[in-house]
Length: 64
Image 1 (tube, one colour):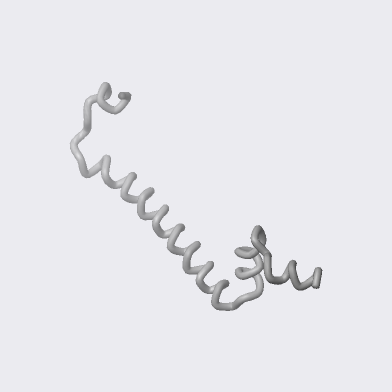
Image 2 (cartoon, helix red, strand yellow):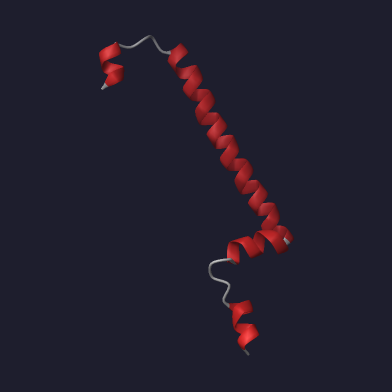
């Protein structure tokens, strides 16, 4: 019975176990990571493009 408890209560490692051993969870993990990377890239790109598109602000306004 002691060994079965570990199998049914993998609280802390459950996410890692799912990603490592369940194919659909692995696919969802890849999708989630890809979405995160794309979101970060989008924010970074928009951050680089926006200052050029907008008219330059006051140096005092930026520092505040």
